Image (cartoon, rainbow, N blue to C red; front, side, top):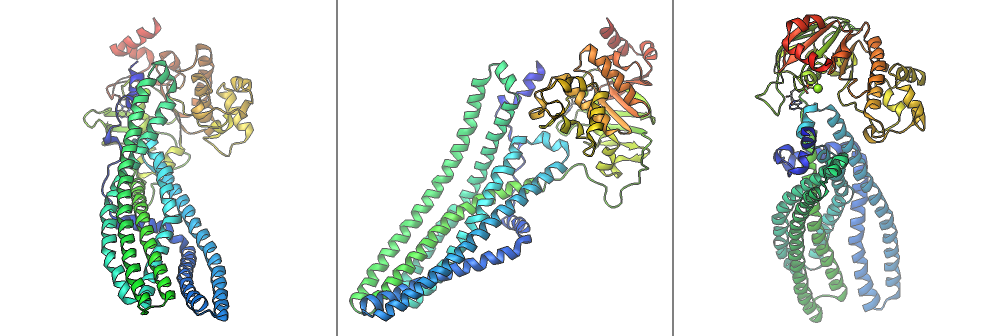
Length: 604
Ligand SMILES: Nc1ncnc2c1ncn2[C@@H]1O[C@H](COP(=O)(O)OP(=O)(O)O)[C@@H](O)[C@H]1O
Ligand SMILES: [Mg+2]
């Protein structure tokens, strides 16, 4: 019962903000620098896209000049030849414009997709490198959302928004220059309005970025919530927890909506302010310009061109202000990704030369004075001054009540955590001076909850040794007494097991995990209650297989049933993170009252 409540704990309570990675402020410079780091490999493409961008912007501006000529000489002066020449120019510009637009669109979108793919890859690589403790403090759904939704935001920005911003920036500059050339006096009216437009963009932009970060965080929470509820769907339904979960989920969704609403509200205000300013300026300009045409100080073509440039400039400012908020959103997303990319693994590889480990190893493990507290329980040691030497080839059993620290000991031997004090050595080499890969290559573990992956039986056994032949896999399965149930599966070794192996029973999963360990053929074997989910008959068989497997290897077996450890060389009894007694079964029966109690409970 307590297991069930703890596994649904997160469903009951709003997600603890302390569990989400801290929002340390990351400067704009840093965000740009990191983004650039991902873009730099493609600088030749960026150049290509920029050329296309400048070309198309220039051509659009040039087009207006042609319209001016068409109006003045064609329509007003009534000259056929000028009209023809001007139209020819128009067509030529249109063709180049088409080519340029193609190049710009293709290369810019390409960049967006490419950079996003690279970011996803490096975030995932980084995740695989992080120490397991990191994932205790961070929700997995939250992390996956960063890889999916946050990167998508960045893709939109690099693959379109930035180019829209740049294009419009060029149009803004170019348009303003042409405005000056056409009519400086009128242009002053336009320029006066610029602070009125840029001011709100900067003012609201900051708020949008903050809200956008919050909004991504909320969406991530929603994702995390769904993931956990689905994984534990049987528990959810068995306890009729659906209504409660629905309410909780609704609250997260509504929170996400509320943040988004505030964001789009800001954006709407921004757009409204900008548009109103722009249109008022335009109206003022057309009025003043119209007077000039009436008084003959300006030609109709010039006014047409002028209004066209003014519209271009106004549209550019409008587009930039819209895109700015998208840029701000992407900055928020990048901030979240940088947090992940910069998280440091607590398990570090040795700096410089890795210590020399004679391979194949003899398999002597020495634990000296281990003191270890889980990061979330700094005052509560899970291992408390533990000393233990496991000789090469020795078969050692660890027994003790649940919570005594047995699994934790395996975690330290595999170096998923480093102890606060004390050391773990393998063949007298401190494991901290080894590359974690070198260390883990020597060992195979069958863990308490056998971990299977989406894929076939074959994939799952071969997990430990990807190059193994079908025959080797099948032999390993046979030795783990797994072949009999595998052959009864609809597609035998090719049967798909579903996510996490949901289509198998606990005992079947355990046997696959054992087959996986057998296939790896390591010097050191760590079995964490590897037979706990088996029925008496298969347990006996698997026990035989394990006894066979353990021969000649250093093996540490965590056993909850004393019957399964009759053939070991030594039994070690753990209590509260310490070793309280050791010896053979008979010795312990007479020397340890705790062991006697355990034995009595089990054999009665
Ligand atoms: N990831 C964790 N974070 C914090 N405490 C943990 C974690 N895993 C285990 N513990 C605690 O450490 C102690 C030892 O646990 P464990 O090694 O799993 O015990 P055993 O395998 O002997 O049953 C227990 O009190 C348990 O609650
Ligand atoms: Mg355990």
